[in-house]
Image (cartoon, rainbow, N blue to C red; front, side, top):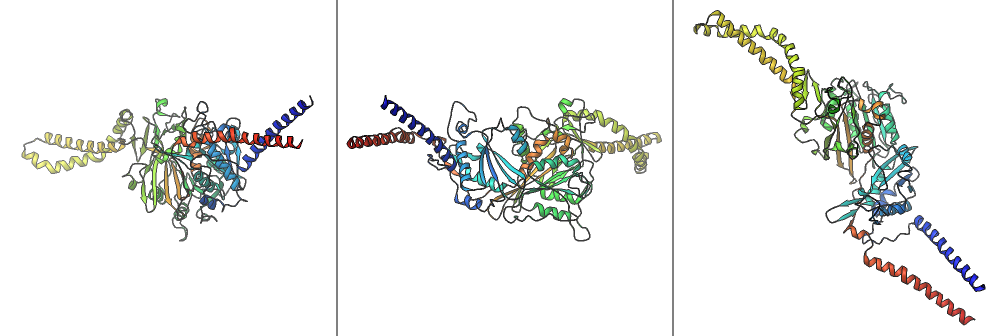
Length: 617
């Protein structure tokens, strides 16, 4: 009994010690990242170049958190191609991303890793990261956020962005992805400059609290971590960022419904277009323009937008057919408010604003108020939208994000209509053509008939006399000519009054993407969004949960953040996906170590202790 109790006590003590050791070891291994990378290519690695770039970041001014949306053990149960938890419990994929994130946390004091639950913390995620309905977050997503001066900027990524696929080869780009994202988030908060001084609907001039009709748009920028400022370019220039020489503080210039043109010469020393151009020529600086259809021509601004960004706001007012709202997308009886058509061409830069929305089972509607169409500049029109255009070292691509509704929209321009569908053209011929024809026929008859009659009479009277025609017959000849002359002019007018568009429905929102290589070798991107109405960014449109306006604008704001792509970070080549799992040889080695070598060592120690104790006794 005595020895049995002692034996049980020792056994219990040893089991308790083993459990405590496992708990302690798990804690320490997680804290200090005691991980053995068993893959042929070491994936959990930070390059020296990344260390050089990230060591320059001020740890006092940056507080970067990498959020994973599942427990680390759960991340092990997802395979790269399956996207579902279950039958094939591959242990690679997200686990390598997580371990690499932990290594970044270990190496850099301003980076930490935290866990959120995509379901339980959904409200927290939306409130703190302003996530849109077009982004369905789950365990395969990662959020990286940086809190600076009380504002949070962030990026969302999914697992497949950390891997590059080819036919029979896989590349892991975790080091590249994490480093570029940290660089993009670090530094001062991006700035959204709302330009005023041209009748823009951005509230009382100079009032930093009043943003008028643009208030909802301003709040979207603020929720995304942007600093908000108003700026009058006749009074001051855009400030130069203190870190502009390195990677550049991100920013966007917002032009929201101006009434008057930008000034190119004010007292000989102020040129607003020059100031705007200089700002947008810097790294990570972008443009957002909302223009209403009633706005008069602005030669200075129009020329800059057309020449530099390929944007041309057409002199049109769009209406849609109200007879069949379900098909036409008409929202109001006047036909001015409508739901636009999504661009489905994935090669178009504009699709970057809506690609996540197109994956939803139920497609949210894009609301447009009274609007005008947006087209490419004439010099770009020889290329398809989305074709790259080179200007020096900069490459530009422009494409639609939203189009006029299929089989519904007509554009009123310069006293005439342009219809985007052949069936509707026939309908509008009956609806507009005949009435307009009967309206202008008397006007043209009054203007042209008598003159044409008299000119024909004077020119052909002698010829008709020689032919032996009577005065009545000559009068009939002159009358027929004059009537034909009037009809020819009326028909010419009507041909421009109602035309059938020979292209696909016109764009009502476009996105231009400009990219170039900077001196340090990284690729720099800038964007210009052009929208044919301010109503798209109104409070009613943004706050209506059934519309996609908020999602589209938020995606644009996401693009407008600082984007840095370091050029010299190597990606790791993986010969095959199977090599990311422990192969049979490695499995056998670890089995022998854990199931034979370690127990054999314990047995050897036990035998040695037993023999020594017997000798001692």
